[in-house]
Image 1 (tube, one colour):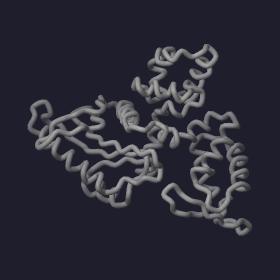
Image 2: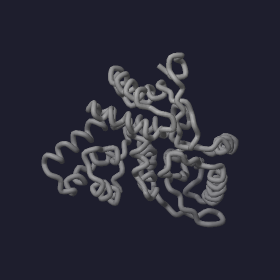
Image 3: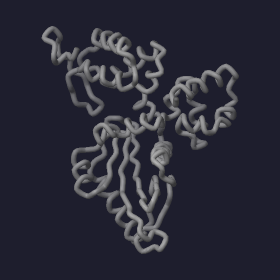
Length: 285
């Protein structure tokens, strides 16, 4: 199925988000659709159509947008999960909704969380995007949100975050309320990490979480595991309604289940309200 493994198919070079070129791979597309929960028959149909359409120089973004469009036409709930990366990119322009999303991720892992908190270090004050606490363990999290999926987090970021975390730990180690506490620093991004960032994190003990890192347990897998799909993944909602919900601190579909009044306050028609609640329940179920 893969162009690279077929003597009868011409290798087609496409453009990645980073600007680099790579050979189009049907297998990569197939795997992405499979991870989204699409059925084998649907996957085969979509891959066949994309193979006939793909051309040299086309971007991976256009390829996956086209594949998603076909998947959506199949009326499959997996089309929503397939759109997850783009939905995260649509949480902007500020990084605050992403910080709320990461806070919810830690909550689902059993932590009590605070978002956007200014705290004292030994030398200066710091704003931590997320603080997650449980059983005398406290995670100090810096979130790096980008609207450009080709963006990498350079090594300067973990270097800077590590020094900030150390300053906070130095202060809290002398505070009675944090007696016997252990602290862990994090950098979490919706895009990618440079190789130097990964090496520094491993060497320094700073925890790193990116879209596909660590392999098999990245941000994408954790969002899917806990069903923390952002509201921007929904198709039965308008941009102005999304903006209103984000301003209210509603970032995930599961929050809409927990706070049904948030939907009622949008003033939707009975038909649209029914369609939207069904969509939310389907994706969260």
